[in-house]
Length: 267
Image 1 (cartoon, helix red, strand yellow):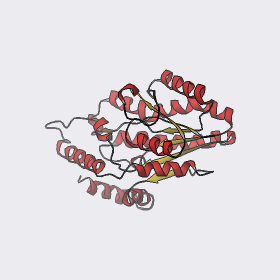
Image 2 (tube, helix red, strand yellow; image 1 turned 90 degrees about the vertical axis):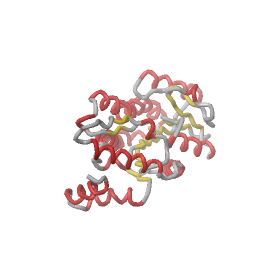
Image 3 (cartoon, helix red, strand yellow; image 1 turned 120 degrees about the vertical axis):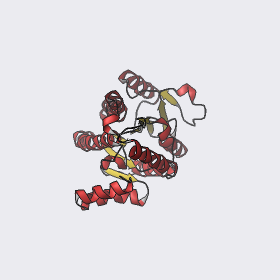
Image 4 (cartoon, one colour; image 1 turned 30 degrees about the vertical axis):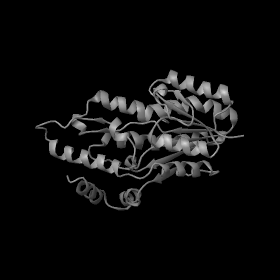
């Protein structure tokens, strides 16, 4: 019997690519979107779900279980970007960001774990980011939310392993998606102490996304993880230098690594 997959944020970008790839591999795929009625070209069903709203999470999961009787794989992909100098990002935007990127995936996991325990099997894949392995200038909140999700995954793996449930992270680098258009951008304030450096960094960040890899690489990576009987704790997917930056952070003195980042962002 085909495995049932739930992908949050399945209407565009990486989530859509993963869903289409798995659909064509024979999986029963359900994606989610805050506004599924607006999506007309999905090859797999989309269910209304807002990761900031636990009621919608419970409703969506109950609907899938009522149709299929199970959920084998959950891919926590829904997320948003945020940029800006820490000093100039409104606190409410920081909290909104964590509600989506951190507490949202946690609520999805809490909602699906009882069913996976009942099945005595399941796989949860949390889509994080290579940015979560380091503090990046003008991306402090994004790095923090993705890094926090990586750590939560490490802990949860140990808590649920005896139930036959596997939990893992997959951290993408820059991929050519529409994430930049959906980010919260703190405005570049005229006369601000950060006007020039943040303005330049914002352009660099957007260029990296536009020039990013094909999201099908993420789809193939997720498929390979699903085919693995005992997944690793962390996976990284992206350009060589992006993945290598994590290795450099591990082996270089902190200030030397900081200098490399500052040179890259022209700070």
